[in-house]
Image 1: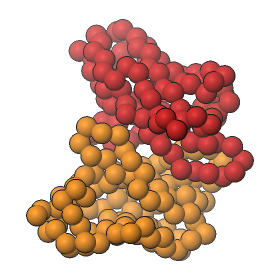
Image 2: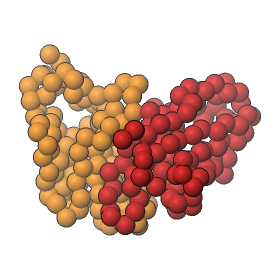
Image 3: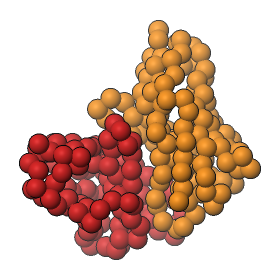
Length: 113
Length: 115
């Protein structure tokens, strides 16, 4: 079955720096890759996603890139702010017609002022 | 639109008991998936229901079961609770139809503690 690896497990940056989180997936048939942000004690929130027919997607300070050949995708956050501090999860959806998301293990991002 | 809701938000149970959790999806969403979140195992897929039918299942023992009602609300049940079942149980819903809209939204979760 699908397996998703996520790195790094923790990431500390200074406010204003950029942050990059990387994920690799194993199932070449996966076709949808969302990213979720989870603040302490709260639900995971969908922040951006990308489909397999697109190489890059941007939404203000966040962007996601997808390399289907290498089977990896990355989350890029520019001009980080303290409120970006949270745990970020990547996920992959296989092309089975069913909504089974396989999640990475999470990256704890700490943005220091 | 109202978001995904889950009840109860917190539960404390004793080993051997059983528990039922409920999830009400966003209006119009017909698919409900359940996930278990623990510090050690992360977010793990339990099962997905669509139109009252389970159409996908994760690698959990048979003590974990679920169902979906005609209004798309879903329940999951855990029987013979074990200490290791202590976790945050999240449901997530999405459109589920033929429009291939995959965006999935999570409920606030039910924090289950087994003592």
